[in-house]
Image (cartoon, rainbow, N blue to C red; front, side, top):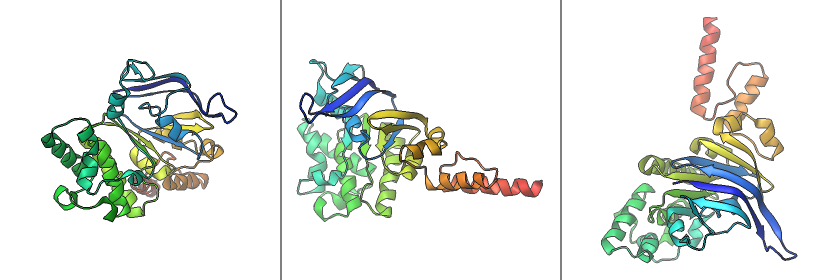
Amino acid sequence: MSIILEKVSHIYSEGTPMAISAIEDVSLSIKDGECLGIIGRTGSGKSTLVQHFNGLLLASKGRVLVDGEDIKDKHTNRKRIRQKVGLVFQYPEYQLFEETVEADIAFAPKNMGFSKEAIVEKVKRAMELTGLDYESFRHRSPFQLSGGQMRRVAIAGILAMEPKVLVLDEPTAGLDPRGRADILAHINKMREDLGITVVFVSHSMDEIAQIVEKVLVMDQGRIVLSGPVRDIFEQAQKLEDFGLGVPQITSLMHRLREKGLKVSNRILTVEEAKDEILALKRGQKDA
């Protein structure tokens, strides 16, 4: 399914002395199966933007089309849209409230009217996708789990609705390195197993490099750069001008180029950097 924004602006407290423009004149298109990253400084409008994807916020100006449906149209069923476009907020574990992991994950499909048998299957599948063993975790209190496990329970609660699009707003925020690695691994697994569209909002350039194919850069409520992830991170100076950086390994490769080494500045991972440097050494020996 596709999401299209046409010249969308959003003003908080519109028509009052407290009015604040959060995003302005934003146009974009998210294709079925795409993995899109959104980056930008705090206050650049990232979270406001993604809340328009399923109608949690409605545009002050412009149009948002989800599978061809205008979210603001009076005939559009926004509840159905929110089932198709699942949004995981920052620190989603703060929204856990049931006594058991199973009950929390089952909450949405239960309210959607599915049978008990169907709910159990949806819960099992969502837990499998997020690396939570059903029998081991189903009766446990979510509040007795680690931070990373709680985060995965919260994500499973969204996956239980079987969305076509999963929007993750800073999904690794506040987690330790192991917790972050687990979340990223399971996001990649979900993409492989389900083929769903993923929108990934993050302050971490290293995480963006590991996950996404295309990047939008936001600044002061506008999209200022857009393109394939390698093309975006090649523009280190422009990103710096917007208060951002590049992945650590990409930064290293930029510095090596400045020292005169003929290495690519389009490297995103340690493995790619290793291969590039080994290839350079082999080339020097051959020469």
